[in-house]
Length: 240
Image (cartoon, rainbow, N blue to C red; front, side, top):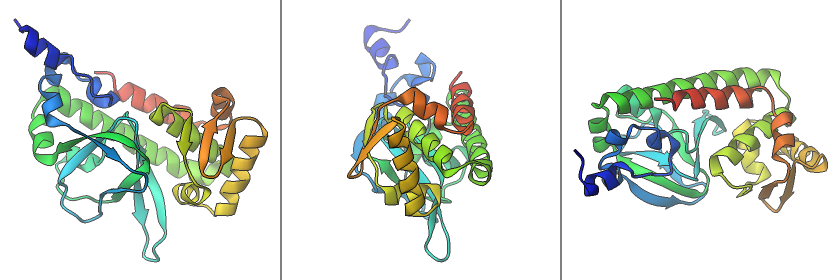
């Protein structure tokens, strides 16, 4: 029978939805394995080709995984919030970062050393949950590949903002047109047009790099089908 002290540990809530979906017994000593740190926007967290020293579990921060081409252009290939972790290759036994990642929207993350992560991967429930999350991330990457070809910039912009709103848990966040253009892989002028259209229809307000979601329902319905498809994939992955 668990004593009062152990029960308190088992009831630990990190704020990261993936970790908090673990069975209570698997959350024992989880607090001791996490260093809660604040990340500023644009702060690098992993570099492509480097040895992984840690895994980050976002709480209210949003992290981006990007592919950088030979000419220096970068395009977002994955976005991670409280539903997941960075870097997913750690759950597949890789010790090297395949992509560069950085903080997209500043906030808190729970940082776990790669050693503690690998030790926890020997637990059945922990390993299953991490791998299910990787599967949802793979589904999202495939969905976005289709999205980038078939859906309008307005739809993609609304989808990206809707997903960021979900991950941050706050209707207000900082975001520049230039940064969003990098994330969507389009010209800055195209993002400005999409943001202006969303503001005109009353879905958001935008001023000096600050976004406020005014009408969440309108923003969600303006987004392409990929928003709901990816949201559902991660929701299913969180079910133990």
